[in-house]
Image (tube, rainbow, N blue to C red; front, side, top):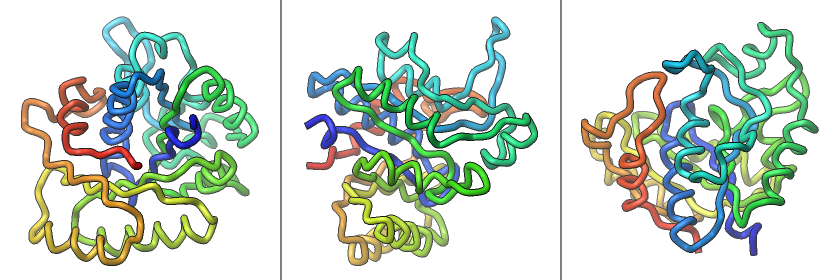
Length: 238
């Protein structure tokens, strides 16, 4: 039962709304009375808060969505400073990203919660080291995949290529989400229809552009209100 309520969220690219969708999914799952945690295998990019603490905006969003139980947990085993591809950021810090360490950190959280929402970094095949990529991590975890499609020019090709990559690894696609981003693309409904006709997985919803007062600043987490807005337009997989 737990496995059916845990998901791995990947995207068609970086900056397509994986964190927004992941946070909204956590809220939806919590509404079912479940204890839910977020998890990221790796993050790249940190900022300092007013107290000088080094934080990552994605992790702080997931932590806020999950609530008090997650504040003392390690939601990510590798927090890298530079906002670049993880394997490059790790190289600049003389760190080796190890798949085994990621899996151990995930299993520790997975054993403590009713459900875990794992958010990938960048796209599905982002490298971790010379041998492994995030697709390998998702394959080992074996969780149903939720694909976030950033609705912009080129999204149909990116979405279908990602679906092929998922299917080649025999990963179940629980559903896909269309995220409108900052500017609504022309003929967005026709693009969504094209994807519906080509992706066999369920369509879980279209998240409109966030109202201006809910749009986040750079190096800042989403607000709880922004996650609640997204959750209103999102359906959980059956």
